[in-house]
View 1 (cartoon, rainbow, N blue to C red):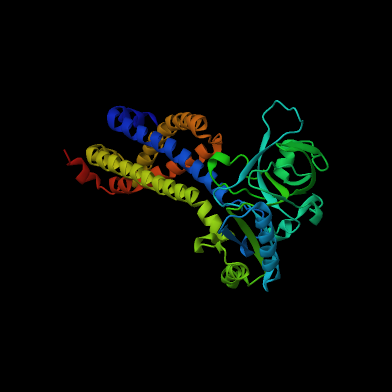
View 2 (view 1 turned 90 degrees about the horizontal axis):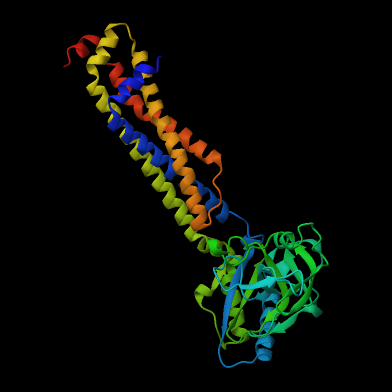
Length: 409
């Protein structure tokens, strides 16, 4: 089929053609960037915490009365002994936060040199003891676990100055890209500390985009945070025991000492924490997915409407072509090629718009660079959508009998 007659016909309908081209271009710009955001959000919310999520739950405990650090530490020791002795409990430890909690995490700057002037590598601190790794269900890639004699007790205003720490693989790579983090000395705000162990993955308590670059850079500090305001107990249940322990564990703590408050919403599983922590990401992904579908339907509707209008306007020309020997397949192919050219023009313009929009998102919203394959997928989707949308009007045009078409004015 010759392209020249199609281009001549399109030039006669510049306004309508330009509107469809612009609609396709805007659709590609919006859909490609929206789908890229959906993809990044989906990847983000589907990442593992590195823990045994299926068997972990958390108890947020608040103390009643005026207590000093020594009294709080004694109560925490008693609570942990109670939890670890319960049937169905595999292990437990106390910390100030837990993965995907949504807040409460303590940020710490880690330096390689004591007088380092460059910006430190920020990380998320988990207070832990020798039971933490087993409770979380994470294993060491290298090094050793904490010993019981290394576990200290910190007040809420004490400086974090541990002699040893365990860090995640991601943090180890950022500190020592050559892979030699184990056994090295780094510097926290309280002074030097030695890296004695490296674990694979341990996600931080923040799920928001503002901490996305460090939410796998975790550091385990051997200490119990004896905060008079309260404590967080992480408990790992044995298989099949989690539902019963969600009721039994808080009851056991209250029986141990009633001078505390445990709110029902303070007892949460890690699976529930994941659902809550990623609720925003999931909502944004769903909303953008729905918006993309609606925008594609609107674009398809525009193509159908324009093609149907052109069919009604070209009945005489179609009839003449049929009378001169054009088959139904020729008429159908004419409209399909015409639609392909219109959509292609919109795709070229939309690709430029899409790249410009992505650069703006990178500047103001810290979105990563959109790979070109996303634009390619969007273009393919619009080409297919255009062919599907034009198929109905094109079939109606091809079905008009030659004699009936030539009588049309």
